[in-house]
Length: 318
Image (cartoon, rainbow, N blue to C red):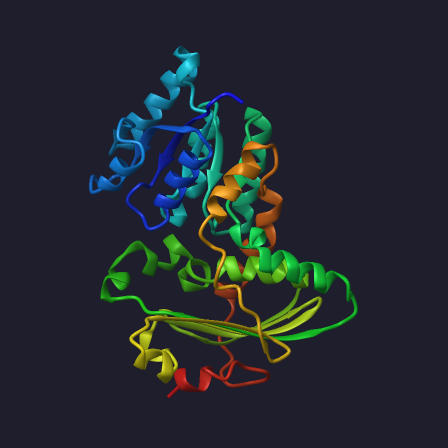
């Protein structure tokens, strides 16, 4: 197989090194990078010879020249690790310059934006691929297989994810609902994708509590009743976790049994790239359920302590 040329948008972020590693481990090369920040020394550990741009216009021109003038230098894929609200713009830039796009979650913030991406796929003949690495986790694959064998059973699930963030978070684009989709999208979208993928379509949504730091609610899925709690407030951590000096806590219980998928994350981005390069990979249609769900959660008003709420909510309302 010919070595593929990659470009990447968003090198300074948390997730970019996983993409650098995946491109390297699949035997391909990264030839161009865009990031408005020039604090990207991490590049030296992977692709120090890649062309680097801090202006999107110059990066776009570089992609265009590679596409139109230099067949050997043509960019095959653009990996997109930019802030959430810029994903669809960067995807369009990639496809219009003859490349396929590989995009981090969330693909977009609103379901109607997916329709526009479907149109540009048709117009350009290029494809949009999506990183949904939890679907490739061995424990999730096994769980889905077990659930599919019992189509009539309804499970009771509690999802708790608390990951403490510092003051900086509130001053970044991630705290801007219009740019990030809030913590429902920032830290919840992979979980919501996994839950709808394994337990089926959403039938009902209730929001019990919402603040810039914490969101909690209830989902009725086809095969599960889900109480969920997401927070970036370290004060919400269980006492025993905080006393150990840890800043994150994740728990998923299914019918009161802890489901452990804490291991096995190391190479999931590389596996995602391998699937894409072999002609598979997740597409726009796979994003519709969780993008729609996250949008609907953001649109609901909290009801307070009514119905089947997560036990951590009472602590949030103190």
